[in-house]
Image 1: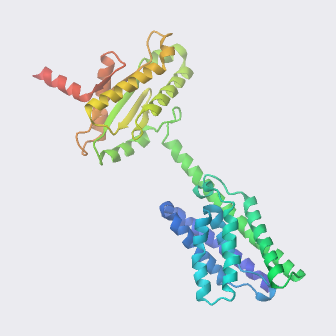
Image 2: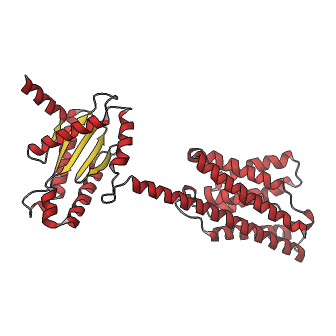
Image 3: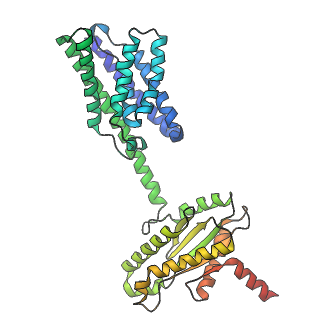
Length: 368
């Protein structure tokens, strides 16, 4: 009876190893090295299982296949096959009997079978691994071993069948436990990601908020000259007072949609607050910036053309622009300058843009 405790011990060891591997992956933030780390850890787990041989009189196999199951299911065939390299080498070095047969049956075949159930979303963690896939993989491998033993070894005996059913139960329970651990880890990761997204996202417009904008913009300014556009929705208060807050909120959603879909791909848009938006722009040439801002003003006015026919104060946007003189420019100063330029656009009649350099030139002319 004690010999049946050996696979139970191996199963507990494997579950512990899986827990350690998940923690290593999360603590090291090893996503960029996962293609290398996954087969390495899987191969080492296989070798540890090979170091705990199961009682030969029972005709039981060891659990080296189980880590391969997870590699194939979660990462696909290439990673699963790569995971077999270390246990293959260990089998040859340790002069394992029937090494080629064991490689084919306990490493390569499980890699192929488990990879048939692979989904790329399992690796990313956005999709939980179904328990039924684990049961299917274990069942198919079990049937394969029965077929091989019956056809090529010594036929099937009731004793052998009982031992294999016992091992099927152990392998299935262990694999399901591992899958549940991985799914729980993925759920925690998704929850954390969602909380981070909510903390950095404006709930109304679904744009990034100012909290997330500031560090990204500061980092970008250290690398190259950038521009800041302050964008304000004209006559929003009148519209809000006339139609109510719900319609006002919908208007903010609509203008954020227009801006999001017409800014340059490499630019970064966020909600500054109220009816104001802030745009980090990679363009620094004044002429091209002017054309860019003018185009956004035109598109916004066109988007609200139907609304503007029925209201006295048209819905448009005004823009203020400031450009960094060097990579040493302060983000807060640029935002202040763009805000001053925005105020000038409002003062000059709205639905237009103003560059802060125009204000500087006007001030210099007045002082002269």
